[in-house]
Length: 293
Ligand code: AMP
Ligand code: FE
Ligand code: FE
Ligand code: ZN
View 1: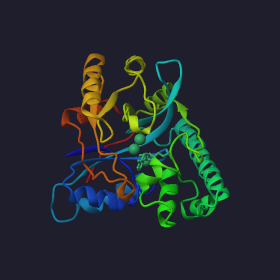
View 2: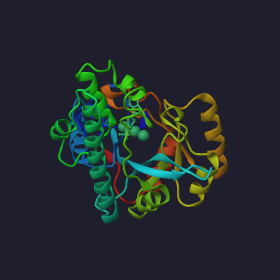
View 3: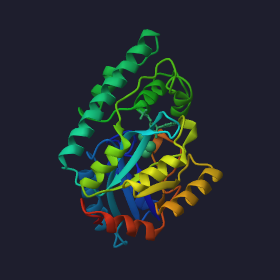
């Protein structure tokens, strides 16, 4: 079982990287990618946890693919833009451009959580963005899931999902935009750092407007390696359309859970990637090693 998209508490998941690996191993995952938003801060702990897992019980070890989910902005193919997530795998985490850009985006994320918290506080909602940020690592990529959890803890909403559907929704009264990287620049940056780039959940429609297929075709011609087809937010028709497009454009097709621990209901390995696709991604990457436990 190969799951190429998961989050730890280094971004907006709820499990530490070590806990995430243990959960994955217990679920029978053989290859796990750690893809926190706009950070590689969880890589070291995940790598250390892998060696501990590998030495336990004589079980076949798990393999760790280190990556990240980059916050980007993409042309929508209709003259406008949409926010887009781009998975980068096996890039050099010390590449100066990536270091600087991830830092810029994380700063913007914290400013935005602060601003959304202030808007909510002004309306009497019991959310203190500043206190929330103080509980996170100083340079962490804070996001709406952290605000959602604070709203749940304050008894304002019953679940994280309800917070996203209501108070925190894009275009809602408390929504503030954050900085993103133009997607073509993000693809170039990941590849320059020896990594491979996969467009994450391109047709996740419940999050807002999505790209036209024409954009994926253009990105395929300019360095995009693959597209995430099997994702919990994709319906059957969209999966079929994406699969056909990927076939025509020579894009690799991945599947993954986008596991976020208790911040989402999806279990780890709810969707998976074919071994041949993993092999192709790894064969193209030169920025970081796949780690065997
Ligand atoms: P942000 O990037 O801060 O705007 O928040 C988006 C993040 O929240 C992404 O990581 C999504 O995976 C997560 N997310 C989006 N919609 C939902 C939802 N309905 N329930 C839980 N998490 C969500
Ligand atoms: Fe997330
Ligand atoms: Fe995403
Ligand atoms: Zn994700």
